[in-house]
Amino acid sequence: MRTWEEIAARTASGERLSAEDALTLWREAPLWRLGELAVQKKRAISADKVFYNKNFHLEPTNVCLFNCKFCSFRRPRGSADAWEWSVEQMEQIVRSYKDKGVTEVHIVGGVHPDHSLDYYCKLIRRVKAILPRVAVKAYTAIELSYMIRKAGLTIREGLERLIEAGMEAIPGGGAEIFDEHIRQQICPEKGSTAEWFEVHHTAHELGLKTNATMLYGHIESVEHRIDHLMRLREEQDATGGFNAFIPLKYRNLNNSMSEIGEVPIIDDLRTLAMSRLILDNVPHIKAYWVMYGKQTTEMALKFGADDIDGTIDDSTKIYSMAGAEEQRPTMSVGDMQQMTQRAGFRAVERDTHYNEIK
Ligand code: V47
Image 1 (tube, protein in one colour):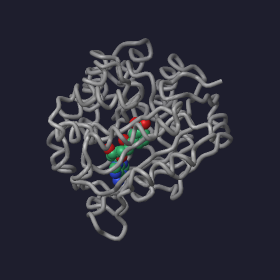
Image 2 (image 1 turned 90 degrees about the horizontal axis):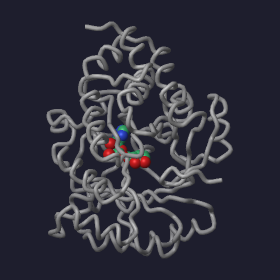
Image 3 (image 1 turned 120 degrees about the vertical axis):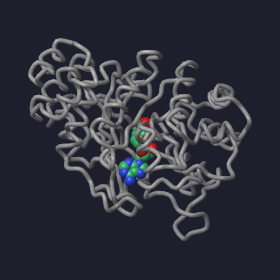
Image 4 (image 1 turned 135 degrees about the vertical axis):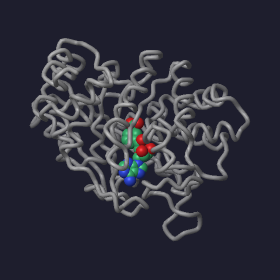
C-alpha cells in the first residue's frame, strides 16, 4: 500500500486517483496538504477565478410524495406551512425580476402528486415568456423521472418536451448518496440511483449540461463518498455532461435524522478537496454558500472550490428550514467579490453555462 505522501506526489503530477489511494489520502493526509493539492488542480482549470451568478430560485411546492428522512422542507398536504403556488403566483414572482440582471432561475420543489409533465412545461414557458434571456435550470432527476414516467413517456421523450419548452440545464439534486444500501435507509421511497443516472445520462446525450450533488455527513462512510464520486467520474468520462459538482452537507434541524448531528467544518473542507482531486474531469466544484454559510464558503475556496453559486435574493427555503446560518439567504455582488478577494482569488460573473459575463 502506498503512503499518503507518495499518493499526494503522484496526484500532484497528474496521476488519476484509484479508490484505494483516495481512501488513504482522505484518511491520512493533513488538511493543509489536501488544500494545497486541490487548489493546484483548481488553478489548472480556472486560474484565479471564482465564479458566481445572478440567480433566484422558484420552489413551487413543499408538498412531496416522498418522505426522505433528511428533508426539513417537505410538509404534508393541507398542513399550515405547506405551500402549493399556482402558475399565476409564480408568474408574479418572476415578473419582479424583470430588469434585475439575473441570468438564471433554478426551479425545484417537492414531487407533487397532481402535477403533470404539461404543467411543468407550461411553467417553464411562462417563465421564458416573462424573462426570455434568463436560463431555466429546472427540476431534479427525481422530479423529472416521476413526471416523465407518469406521462407514459421515455426519459428521452420527456426531456425533449421540456427542452422544447425552454429548459436549458438540470440541477444536481436528488443524488443523495448512490450506495443503494445507505440510500434505502435515508430515502427509501425516493427514485433510485439508476433512475438518477438514467436522467443525467440521457440529458447529456441530448446535449444538456447538468450538475451533480452528494449529500454527505449523515450515516454514510468515507468509502461511500468515494464510491459516489467514482460513479460520477465514470459517467463524466462517458459523456462529459457535468458542469459542476456540489457536495451538500447534511443540515440537521427539524427532520427525522436530527439526532445524527452535523459533521465538523474540517470534514467539509476535506470533502471539498477530495471531490476536486477525485473528479479530475469535472470542471467546477461549487461551494453552495446558502448551505455552508458564508464563513465556510470562504474557506472552501482554499480547498478547491471555484464556484459559490449566486445572489439568491432570499428565494430558497430548503436550507433555512434545515437550520443553515442564513435564514434569509441573499448575497450582493460586492459581498461575493470581497469574499473571493479575501481568499486570494478574483470573482467572475458567469451564466448557467459558465460563459463569463463581462
Ligand atoms: O437533493 C435536502 C439536499 C438537495 C437537506 O445544481 C439537504 O446548482 C442538506 O440539489 N441537509 C436539493 N441537504 C438542492 C440541490 C442544489 C442546491 C444548490 C445548487 C444546485 C445546483 C443544486 O438538497 C436535495 C438534497 O440532497 N437536501 N435536505 C438537508 N437537511
